[in-house]
Length: 322
Image (tube, rainbow, N blue to C red; front, side, top):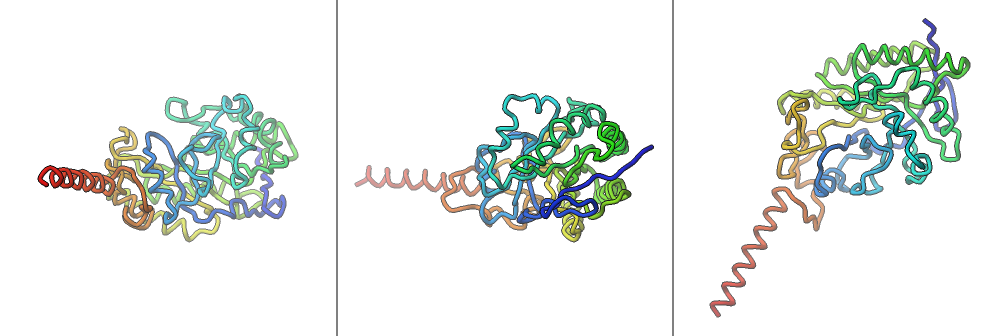
């Protein structure tokens, strides 16, 4: 089977064999934002004191409740996304900080399971014709290859995608600037999948390709198991220069978890406070990330509201007894 390398784009120009993509992330920690979230949840997670520097939301457009201080990375989820009217003008209208773009979410997975279910041949054609030209536009997008499931099926999809890319463009294949990765499972499995992707890409003529982990968690595991997995994972990933960043998959309150995720992955309690897992991920307690004047939900806000009610009653009674 033919297997060729992909030229990756550095901030200093295109060089096969070397890349500095994603170099301007302020920290490695990010968020995969999905599901039901209160404004207060976002304020807490992306406050000035939070270590979160970037996020994505499976969409080409940012969340309207996240400020521009948190870098937004858009995603072209599927072939249908490319058909949306004015999609590129909308993308090019994003703040200049949004210079990185994810492409095709889990194309090896069925749509009902969150995947985009695209054949490698169709994905390669759309990637070359509709996405690659925007690397050379005035905006100069830096793009990832499609992000597959962390499985042998996903690896086989990447192999077929690479083959299809060179069938279409024998000289360039499908150029990219960084690699996106998903992992759902234990720490040992994550290490193995990182090694598998590194082996797949670095078996060609380029080295040191940046990897952005856009989803990771231990679904259906207890909170303690997720904390253990997270602690090992962060220590490992923070020590690897080629890991540009990572995002925890569990940015929701426990009550909004589903049967597949389980509530052990949740960063937030039902009242909006950080779970023990959330405290480990952000590196502090809920009060450490509250900003002055927050009128949001959670135990702190609840206490404030009750204090206000009690004070109002006391004043009313005092007035009545005067």
